Image (cartoon, rainbow, N blue to C red; front, side, top):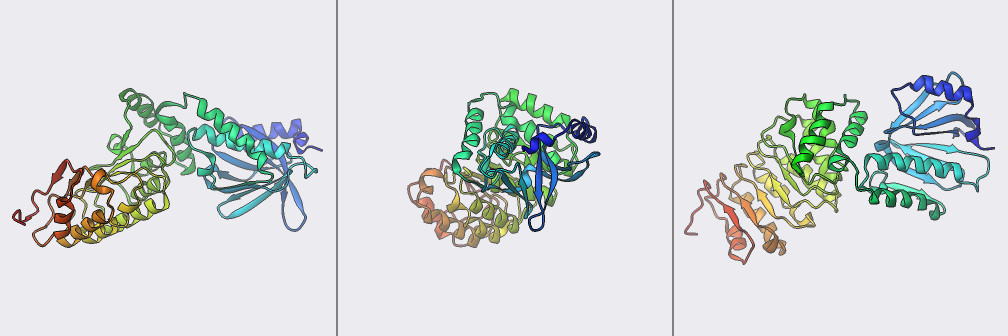
Length: 384
């Protein structure tokens, strides 16, 4: 017997009364939660816009637990009537129906999940949100491909790549209030300007904690290609969220982080984030007026070769660098021969470069594409 038929009128009414108007129900299905051994317990899986809720299958019902879609680490179905979802390292295994060869109910749940996530992130493949998806036979995944194909044909995904939905999703994820004025600014002002740059200074009237979901909304947003955080006060948490964006983004090309008090450890985090995201098209880095010093410059040498689009713009002015750090940086430019044709902007002004900078001389002495070079206030010896 289909477990869906166990959704009685009384149980449906109880679910409605419990969740009220606060939770929009996209799909629900009675399942058997596998417990110890061969034992199972009836539950109701409810799919909402941002979360899966696990409810008891009796009247009055109650919420056993709930998980945000971004907490899903794996989705597996190795039998037709079985579905396993891993949240935060814990596996929940469900059965739907008695026939292990019949996958209709489980496929419907997978489809509901994929559709809900697609509504939030319409331009990002599901496997970038849920890193492990294993369904047997693989032909059952055709439903996911169909959903993605439909989504990719929809021109209207919402203003600025659906930013408002992504912002709402992140507010839910971080248990933060949704600020209507933030969504309005992006949906109207940003859209009217047709800008691809998200500027955090536009939201500096908010508390630091309110910036977290705004920054995280860029994780899987493919409209914005630039992030500017110049001359704003950012908490350590918010700076870490910027690193997370770099680790996850499929579209971020330019980051401007002028005067944030960043040090060498941030550059190390940035480098590690780039290493973990081989797809990011990042090519512009502005760390000017941050005391990253030579250690930070050295950390950056591991980042530069990882930029698959090549480095185009680098601003390290007033970063407390010495000739040692600049030589290390210049050597990394020399080692990456493609940078002779991609790097067009280099600003090292305001650093102490009075000692030997032979590696920089070597790089600049080679035919290159640099159209803007700033070495002012460096005490550099021009005759060298």
